[in-house]
Structures are given as structure tokens and as C-alpha cells.
Length: 362
Image (cartoon, rainbow, N blue to C red; front, side):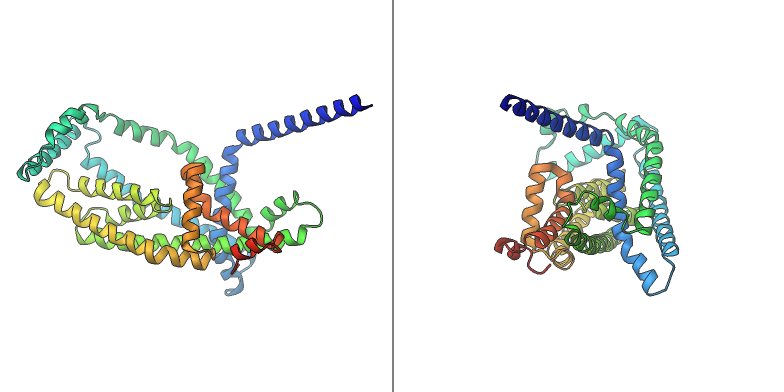
């Protein structure tokens, strides 16, 4: 009898492991669909305040309000794509993408100007650069190859865009669709608390994503003013791109700073390094640093404290831990995931002192 019970237990355990393995394999295979759903959920959270405004203030029908919101998002996307086309065309022309020899000549000319400038300041960088064989390692054919790959990827992007917009429309139209899907996995007896948690999470995350848009807008305005003052071509597009990259915590500002430095220099490629390129690039980077200080000490603390009701130090530690554990993706999803966890803890484990302390203000 005991041997039969043990055998049944082993078979049950093997069955559970097999089922978990199959589920994980299935999720791995449909990871693209999961990404589409996640992006659509974010878009629906951003669009939720717009839909509510149209329904409550302007008395729009729910379907019409959703359609207007989706048209707004599509128009915004088309406008953004239209903004980036001149930047790509202009940078392509200035970098001589269709003439690799001219591109190499321009870069080497800039290199010689930089070396000459530092020689006047008794700094010998030429030997260091020669020792590293930097110019010999540069493969200028990577640039047109990159754009060819970009064009070939437009087909997949179009399919993904249509899928995200389609899913977003129904998430906005039936705001309970995603909630009902999750509620099917909630054990009996926890339905009411789960619904309250879900509603609270939606409200907080909607405010958080709207706050991120405000953060991007503030950086965008500052970057645009700086770039326009110093006559950088395509200032609006460069400013928006650099502001958008700042969405990645801590890593984003470094990447956007390097991108702004590169685009500021390339916009004046062919000009004198000491008289034009260096002064303009220096002033632009000073403006970039000033914008980052405003964002770090004013914009972000205000957004985090008002939207997800968390202390800036608390947010900082969570982002760092998530980055160590899961990399850049973890840093991006750290705040939304942490906010959801806090709401669930408050709803289900509020009797514990540490939970009350952690979720104070929610």
C-alpha cells in the first residue's frame, strides 16, 4: 500500500513538472505575443485618462471615446515618424552614407583636427590612438548595412504595430477585459480583494505613465532650447530622441548624452574643430548636464512621489536591485512591478507591521 502511494506521488510530481515545463516552453514560443500584450497594456493605461475625460467631461460614447483616443495615438505616431525622416536623411547626407570613401575622409579629417588641437595644448593623443588602431578597426560599411537591416525589419515592425494597436483598442474599449482574464486564475474567496487591488494598480500606473510623458516633455523642451540656441540642425528631433531614451533609468541618460554629443558633432562635420565643433559641442553638453540635474532633482522626485507614492530613495534602491538581477529590462519594469506588488501586499497582508510601513500612503 505504501509503495503504491509513493509511486502515485512520484507520478503526480513528474506530471506537475512536465506540465510546468510545457507551460514555460509555450510561453517562450509566444514571447512576441506577450510583448505585444504588455505594450498594449501600457498604451491602454496611458490612454485611460483620455478616455475617462472624453466620457465624463465631454459625454462621449465609450466606443467613440476609444476611437478618438486611438486616432490621437496613431496621429502622434505618424507625426513622430515624420519628424525622424528629415533627421535620417540629413545625417545620411552629412555622413555620406552612399559614399564610404567620402565618409572615411571626413572622419579622418576630423581626427586630424582633434589631434592638432590637442597638440597646441601639449597633449599627445595621436600616439595613443595609433597604438589602439582605432581608425583601422572602424568598418564604415556597417552604416549602410545597418540601414539595410532597418528597412528589412519594417515588415515585422508593421505586423507588430498593427497587433499592438488592435489589442490596445479592445483593452481601452473593454477596460475589464485584461482584469477578467487575470481573475480566472484567482482562487475563490479572494475575488473582491483582487478586484480592489487591480483597480488601484490601474489608477497608480496610469498616473505613473502620464508622469513619464510629462518628464519626457520637460527634457524635450530643455534639450530643444539648448540645441536651437547653438544652431544644431534637426534640434527638435534630436531633443525628442534623447528625451525618449531617458526612459531607461540611469543607463538612458548616458546613452542619450553620447547620442547628443555624436549628433552635435556630426551636424557640423567639415567645419573647424577648434572654432566650431568643440565650442558648440561643449555648450550643448553643458546644457544637457543642466537638464539632467533638473530632471534628477526636481522632475523625477515629484513624479514618483505623486504617481506611485514611493520615496525617491526607495525607488532608487528598487531600480538598482532590478538592474543587477534582470539588466536593463529589469530597470525599465522595476517601478510598475514594485507598485503592483505594494498594492497587492497592502490588500492581502495589511496585518503585518512591515507591510503597513512599506505601503503607507497607498
